[in-house]
Image (tube, rainbow, N blue to C red):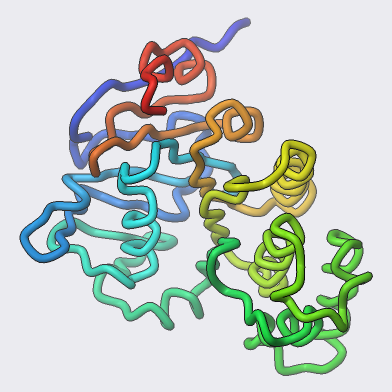
Length: 260
């Protein structure tokens, strides 16, 4: 029996709308009717989205669409003027960034999060800041080396001398070494060669399917993002224009918009 594609074209999803129809798994992160401003300029306008435990959910949009602001708002780096953000059902809207990270939210972004003058090994160990047991740390490092063999070959190399693809791998490895509840991947394919992009998305799929990791994938690369995601949102000018499962997104005319 074929499952009917489910999607919603909307400017603002009502707070009681069940957005993620992809599964009945509990909602891990929930953003409800959140708005933010930079000065007097609105950046997010009544944004609502859910990411369910154990799934990959993508947020698609062009440069300037509001994706980075959304990530920063979930992290608490940008304050929500109104609305609510909940993690595992607990309201974290007023929490500072460090408390949200300690609660299990990690971000992997090639542009931030690595120390360029430190070696790959030191970057990884600093990433595991919440692991106090030496034995556990070594186990986590071995897991990372198995998943990212290129990093094992670069342990004593300074992060700033890595290629773009290797820096992306390091950023992801630094995030997953803490076994986060939610991994936010902020445009992991940006600026990478096609062959490296393929490897990055293989890693996304493996982290989800083999490790059961919940991933919020923020991307411009629509085709690649939908290959690994079960549900997604389209954001433009700080507003959610469309939400739906993979089939609905693929069938939607909104993806024909040239700005995507």
